[in-house]
Length: 248
Image (cartoon, rainbow, N blue to C red; front, side):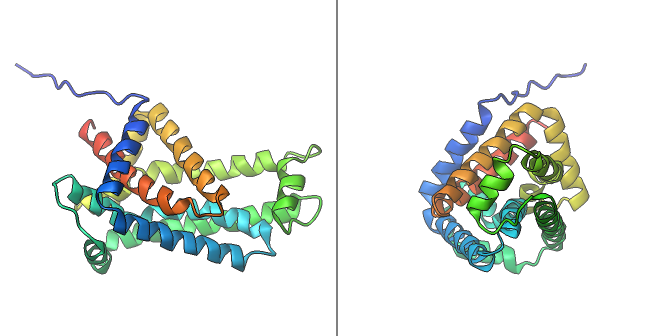
């Protein structure tokens, strides 16, 4: 006789539940999360300063930054993992994870870094080559790229960015938390991530849109909103991983 597994399905309401659980983790142990947010916000300000007169590069740099961000928040996954057992840990636990120099996380981080660099260069090349006038500041980008009526540059820019971002998201949404949580190989973790996306494409498509929306809102506040958005999404991503692997 065989027994059937009655595992709960993941519905479209799941991303909101992940955010709720992530918010609870942040409130329970705010220090490490907010520190992550402050550091990544400062890095964003550094990008703004470095490319203040080269907005054609800045647009790609910020979107490329979103590709790499999940590997920079691995410490938040460890904190959420400990919170689920009733233990609130501090930055010492995060530092211990980083000091372990886990080769799997290093490899994955390098792969994401190469992908982000490729997109930054592609984005810069597209904007400089196809824009009818030089793009030097946000208003130039808005006027001559986003709102241009005589070309499809913005649509093509979004399409090419989506082609790159979609497989990166599909490869990492489960993989990075799994590498923190288990001793799985990079290949096993990436396959598990793709399997989750294949099983729940609508749910994870909605999750990707929520991530982009919250990050976009954080950027519109002069990056100050990222101080809260970064740890919220980091903790919520841990709960997404737990849900997706529990039913896999």
